[in-house]
Each structure stands twice: as C-alpha cells, then as structure tokens.
Amino acid sequence: MKLRSLLLPLGLFASAAHADPIKVESCGVSHTFESVPSRTITLNQQATEVMLALGLEESLVGTAYMDDAIPEQWRAAYNSIPVLAEKYPAAEVVLAKEPDFLFAGFGSAFSEDNLGAAEKWHGLGIGTYLVDASCKVKHPKDVPLTVEPIFHDIETVGKLFAVEAHADELVTGLKARLDVVQEDPAGAEQTAFIYDSGTDTPFSIGCCGGPALLAKLTGLESISADVPGTWVDLSWERVMAADPDVILLIEADWSTAADKRAHMEADPVLSELRAVKEGRFVTVPFSETLLGMRFVDGVETVNRQLAGLK
Image (cartoon, rainbow, N blue to C red):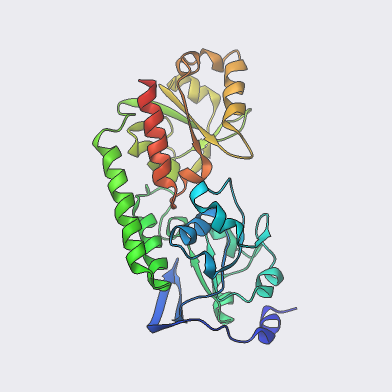
C-alpha cells in the first residue's frame, strides 16, 4: 500500500501556530512548518536526547533505535514515550502514529532500506530533520568535525518548537563546560588507540568523526588520525608499532569495554603493549562519542579519567 493512501485518513493534526511559517533546511532538503510540531517521532538516540534536553517529551508520540541507556536525568520522561521498534520502525508503524515531524540521528533512517527519502515524507506533509553532523554532504568523511553541529541542532529544534530561550541556555552551558576542559586537557602529549570492537581486526576511528574530535578535545593524539573516515578497520600490527600511551575503550552493547580489555590482556602479543601492562585504559559510552547532547559528557568523562591516570 502506498504511503499517501495510508496517510489520507489521518487528517490534519492540531498544534500551536508559529507567528510565521518556519522553513527548516536539513542535508540539502527543506520543509516549511506552518505550526509547531505536536506529534514527533525520533528515530535515533541522539535525536531523542535533544528533544528530552529541551523538555519536549510531550511532543513525542514515539521513539526508536537506542544505542545504550538513557541518562537518569531524562529517564522518567523517556519512559513516558512509546518505543516503536528496537531499530527503525516500518513506514506503516510510523504512519499509524500520525506524525507531523520525523527527527533522525543517522542518515540511514531516510535510506530506501528503512523509511525512505525525506522528500517522500515531505510530500505527505510530514517534516523531517537529520542531525547536522550526520549529513555526509555537509561534513565529508575526510574533513574533521567541530562541535558546531551540536549547537546547530539545538538551536534549530529550539526555534522550530518555540523554545529558543531554553535552547540558548543549553548551548551556553555546553560551551562553558568545553571551555573548562580546553583550559587543561589531561591527554596532552599522549597517543591513544581508540578501540570500538573486533578481535581479529580492530575496529577503530579515522580522522574526522565525533570520536576523533573527542580524543582531540581531551588532548590525545589518535594513532589513526591520518586515516580518512569516521570508523575504520586498523591492523593489530599498526597498534603494536604505535605502542600508544593510552587505550580508549568504547562501551557499547555489541562490544563492552570489559570484553575488549580482557581480550587485550589475554592475548600474548597485545598484552605486551605499554598501556596494557600499566593498565592505562579509559572508557567512554558509544552515545557520548556522537555529536549530540551527551558529547560534552564524554569529553568530561574521558578528561577526568586521563587526569586520574597521571
């Protein structure tokens, strides 16, 4: 059944009107909102957490695709929102919730394998927005990210939902916290191997994504900073040759920090790395490596652990 035929019986959704229509541009496409969205579905954790941080949980009629646990400060609000799917929901499931806004954290949400192109939803009168850092056209894989996409998302969503003052407050607070870390980054003059997953081949980071930015902001020099891309396959030979000062373990449901550390400590070759011998490991949750509301938490967490290693 076509999306349009599914949507037609749903009618129009009541919501507060903007003083003027708001045109939102996102990764090369745009949509004009005549009123404040009142029936939003978030399609990844980064998007969900922006909405929760702005106090917009009452505008959410569904969410999907969590990577790890929602922080305590937003948990009660999150628990009040229906979870539509473990990963991306089917288009029919989305339409059944009568949404007026789809907010995604990764471009894969709007791929043909999942919900389809943003323009298709715009044609049905449903607006979309993709987290700025995930737009590959705007942020090519060989160009290092900055923290600006975080602020862009907060300000854009804040304006769309008419909560600009709250958005400005969040941005100001995040910038101030980053400034504190930048005054004395604890990883200065230290090299690091960032370990996401994999045993036969280590899955790590390249030059230019959120994890690379996090390492840089804490003063660390990634051993793969010269490799294009966000996430990349390395070789254990490269890790051994670099013999990094620190090993940064990414905590994720699919590959825990404890499992990765145990693998390195048990391996007869990897256990000879200085960082393994000396227990120079730090850990960060996967969600805190993404350019969203928790990225600054990740920077602070890693910086604090690095200071403890000293």
